[in-house]
Length: 264
Ligand SMILES: NC(=O)c1ccc[n+]([C@@H]2O[C@H](COP(=O)([O-])OP(=O)(O)OC[C@H]3O[C@@H](n4cnc5c(N)ncnc54)[C@H](O)[C@@H]3O)[C@@H](O)[C@H]2O)c1
Image (cartoon, rainbow, N blue to C red; front, side, top):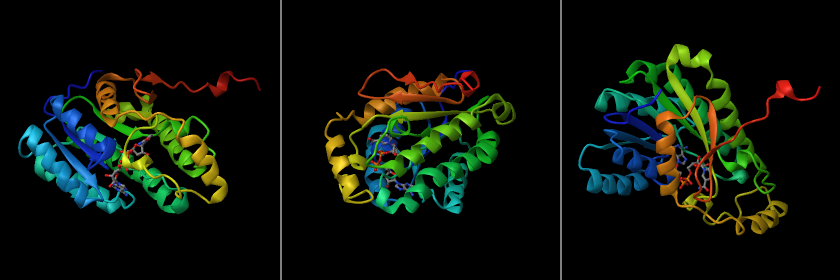
């Protein structure tokens, strides 16, 4: 199935800056009618809304102040989207933080936030308010879900959870009843505030040393590149698949080994 982006409505968590804002712009460039930026930051949203209005004209973006770790606030973002635009076709569960020092909050945003988005999107709003034959949920995982990052093990765990949930929800059983297709994206290091000044956002000295040794060896890619490639994937990639977008190279599917074929 191919999702035609023209005239569609997208809700993007954490859409007021970083990769999320680039998703908003790239989707609008590709025919999406309007985007909801569901973000905690009114300040980022102010700048984002101005930029979007300048490039795309008025009424193309709605900001709803939202903390995704609170399901009522996330629900409100869907409600406001429907009130203004009548429909919702695409959900990007993009909001995330990288900070093992405040790991409970990090799990609340990176894991609970994605669960909230999937529960609200897949089990309620997208099937009811999509315009075409199917809707799409994009979940932001990371290469940290696949590789080993000794300096931020809890962040890695949150991103592995996102990939695992995408695979288990992204199966024909759920697609047939909801017509919602899911994909997970594993970006490599991408130049946004998330990775700027990363020191101190860990469990202490032993992690800091490891962090410093690792971070400078990874060349960042631009967030615009991730947005461009993911906009293509949204349109047609298979349900339940996990994609790596790294070093501005063409995305590739990360295929997990099948447990059933492993030696017992
Ligand atoms: N930048 C990278 O290198 C990289 C790599 C792999 C994966 N990712 C993932 O991509 C996603 C976007 O990251 P980014 O680099 O654009 O980050 P960013 O820090 O630049 O932007 C994150 C946005 O989310 C918002 N946000 C934070 N907490 C929120 C909450 N509780 N509810 C709603 N919005 C909230 C922020 O205000 C901000 O606008 C994250 O899930 C991140 O883990 C980023």
